[in-house]
Image: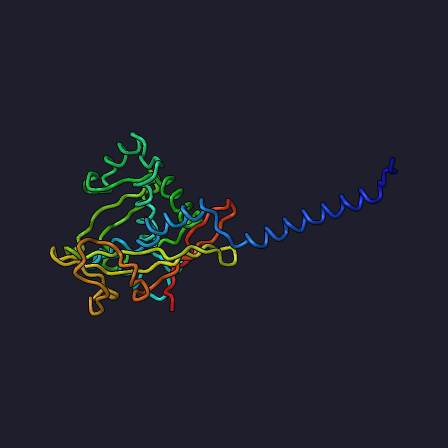
Length: 264
C-alpha cells in the first residue's frame, strides 16, 4: 500500500485555488464593461421616455422636442428649472408615485386667492416632484430660474403648501399637424463606469398620404419617403444624426442623466 503524500496533496490544492482565483480575475476583467440586462432596460426606458424629451413644452413645429437637438451638447447644469420639473412631472404621470396633495392643502390653496382659478392648474406635491427629480437626475435641489422664452407652461412653487402648480400659458402652440420625431437606439455601453446610450434621431412628416423621415427639422434632407407607416428606416440609420446620452451612477447604484451630446 502506497504511503499517503500530504505534501503533494497540499501542492495540488494550492494549484487548484490559484487556478480558481485566476479564473475569477479573468472573468471579472472580461465582464467589467458588460452592461446587465436590468440596467440596460432601465436606462433605455428612461432615455426614450424622458431624456429624449427634455425640451418638450417649447412652442415649435415638433412640440419642442427638436430644441434639445439644436445644441451640440447639453448637460444637467444647462437645463432650466422648468425643463427639469416638466420632465419630472411627465415622469410622475407615468409612475406609481402618489403626487396628490392633502385635502386640507387643496382647501387652503383654493382659499388663498393667490391663484385666479385653481381648477386651471395641475397640482403636484413638492415631495413627489423632488423624488422624481432625484430618480431622473440624482439631485435633491436645483437652481431657481425664470420661465424660458417660448415655453408653453408656467410652473409655480407654493412654499406654504409645498406643491408645484402647472398651467398652460398664453404662448402660441406652433406644433404642426403631421410633424413628429422618431428615434432608434443603436447601443448602450459601459464607458468608464458610465452608461452611454447612442440614439439616431429623425424628423418625421406625415401628410396623410406620404410619410417622410428627414435628417433636419426643415426637411431639406429627406432620407426616406413614401413609407406606409411610421417606422424608423434602420437600413438607412447611418444617414441620420446620432446623439449619445451619458448616465452616471449615483451612490445608491442608479443611473441618472449627466449629458446628451451630438456624435461627430
